Image 1 (tube, one colour):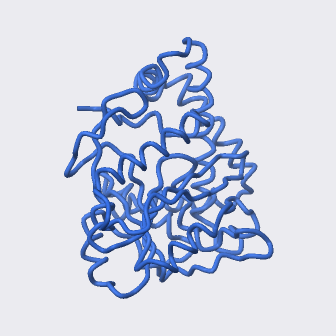
Image 2 (cartoon, rainbow, N blue to C red):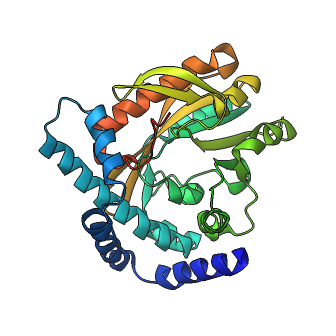
Image 3 (tube, helix red, strand yellow):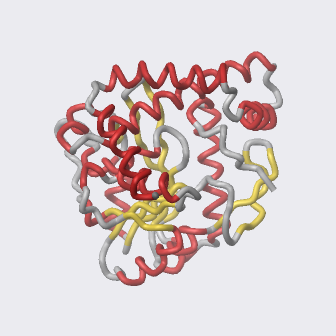
Length: 299
């Protein structure tokens, strides 16, 4: 049954992915309108998260952020479908992502045994599989190749959706071997010790293992997990924070903030706190850009 489910969903994605991105945005807009206005998808979670994160804002401002968030989710769905049927040439021509300050990543990669990039559920995390073709600009193509990169992910509860998303994320490079479940990270880092690698990991989820009390994040008492930072600490890696700002439809800008040069010289919990401070800045600058429907503060 799982194979049939995966084949059906992937087949639909591949069918719709052939449409131009502008057409998919139209479909995404209709989908997000129904999700918000008809089915009220996680409306209570979204509004509660927003109200607790921005207690200074009146209700109509929170509603405005929520509306923008649902529209953004429609765009994410459109871009994810488009990405799932695209090769590197199509992704490169679309220029859906640009990298604003590549020198930060380049310097970290050159000066340390490896780099951990902590990204988040800002922007569109489902299109990170195209990182190696996201150009800095016309004169400076991205120098990294797939063998340099590992993407760390949390396995989905649904076996069908887990397999669909995994295939979707690497469709442009189907023989890519760098998708790592979080539980495999340390083993992979030890196995590849001596080889410079970049590990990209979403680190803002509700902690599912090894949690500690972070303090306040977005005005709320928050627990977090050391996770990939603990691996960086063991392996003397640099740690960067990745911002992914939604500039306009079909346009994201990635930039990096250095958190530390050598994580072994820092308490992993403090590095995680640095990450959350940077993340809060990003969310407050573009509040619609984060995943408000996630139950981040559940007990």
